Length: 192
Image (tube, rainbow, N blue to C red; front, top):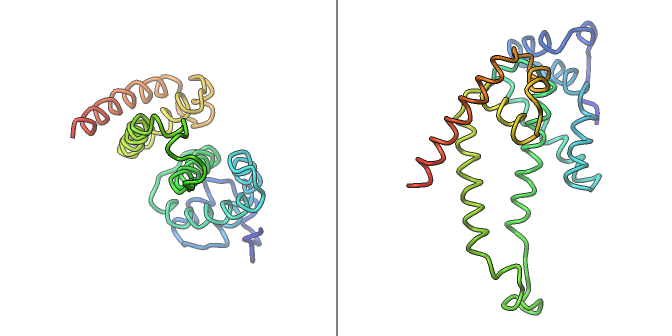
């Protein structure tokens, strides 16, 4: 699972320099060097979600393909933490798609199955999660990243500041403003 061809002179560059070089050149060799540094971490996150080596290897490749486009669109302060969030979101989306395609045969007692008694409740939860994800994508990057780390990954302010590189007072502001903007967006979209 190596993506590197000719990396003479670029292996020693830090993440920010490689990101800048990739954005300016679009070189997959440069992106490969950067991704190779964290590929084992991406694989570990995928393995923890999928519990399957082959599915995790496939996800590692799919995430690399996502990076080709997404890195050119986003301003990234801390590549490692941004990649972690991207990987986690990728895994959650794959799992969500798989759960939508679960098949239950009539022989399995579909009508009597307790899991389907509260189907309406699950539909409501699914709709709420979809609205929340949509609203998260509308937040400015700093707010989105801070809110995800603080609420979804349960990091403290200090950890969020350490991961993102933002000042701790900025982190608190991003979380507070992100939470408010998220609430407004969710309320607006829920009433539609």
